[in-house]
Length: 279
Image (cartoon, rainbow, N blue to C red; front, side, top):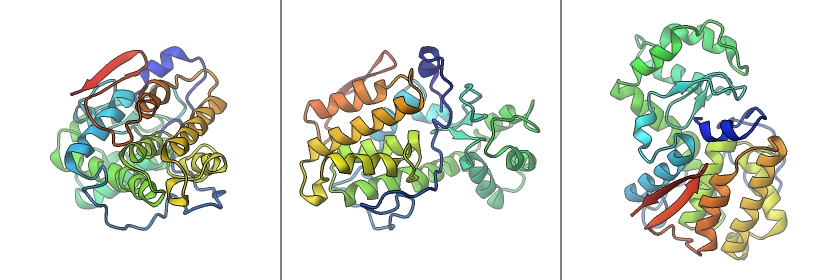
């Protein structure tokens, strides 16, 4: 993920700050967040509604890529020094966290002659590490080249939606959350990953549920989301004591403090010191 603002403000490497797929399960109070059933999502009450989807991706992109134009990030590729190898694409798929490898493998099944296919052996070899072995010097150029292809952009969209966006929405709906809560879960999925260890969404959710009941359990939505954001912020700081937590503090927390549980526009927020507005 492109967190240039974070890296400038912290001396601690952002190890595993991307959408890592953690697998340990320690959440006894709810579903495994990687196995939330694929129930239909109602466009009237969820972020699956296209204008609401666009808004969600814009807010995420403000933190991930320093822009509201999330589509400009398809061709992004860089090693930002976070211990996860190359970070690339619209939500920061990483060579060190398996999701980039999975994306390229799935895409290559349907498009075997793509520019990234020759790098699959190297991608498999470096998976789980920060190594560039077998990827330099040509991988970044190949990623940028392939990102000009509509089918690869669509593959990135699909991987984001099926791996992060839709599971986050389903879990949020199961917990009785409205649009802001759905976005809070989505942004956490992107940043922390959909696993159940202490740093992933499942672990953060379990911590929050110890402090406040979810709306589905009869709890107050604002109080529960406050507990979730507290737990998420603590997880970030526990892992990287100097990390910039503004995507929580001056974005999501701002919306929550204003009581904007429906994520109504216009919106204004700050991430890494930059102000963003959606009319």
